Image 1: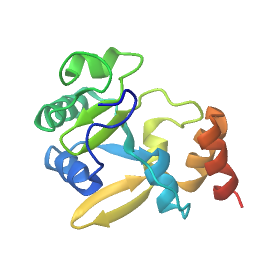
Image 2: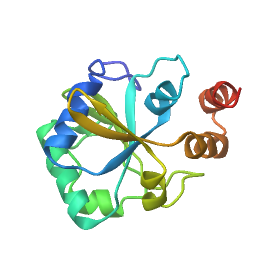
Image 3: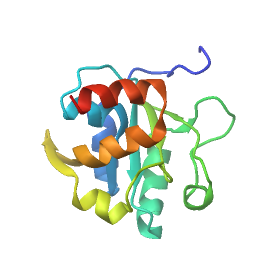
Image 4: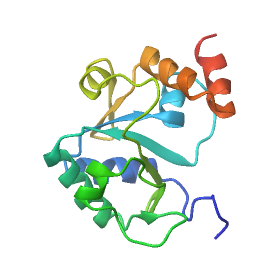
Length: 158
């Protein structure tokens, strides 16, 4: 394994299906959201913001165990519910279906309920997902300032 690169190719449909099976409430952000909003670009991971309530974080922890999630560059297994609720940063996770990033405190992101309410609901092969709305995605990309996010921002605002 090359440090910093995913162990397995991204199978986004299977990740969505596993999260749906466990009834995890989340909003998709990052590269996948940029693609949905019309930016043709590749991504090697799925970035999500989960609903921060205890029940949802418990469902997420169960889904991560089923997905054989483990920190990409650190020892250890799937994060526990307690870690998901208290860790300032959840390290990138390698899963059975590709890399997953669980993000809790995203610069420029609205409160979760607002983010979800303004999101774009999509049905993908009988799995409903919510993609961050364009204005929210632009706000997050702008606040990040990372080169890849600035490139996305230029396309998303054109």
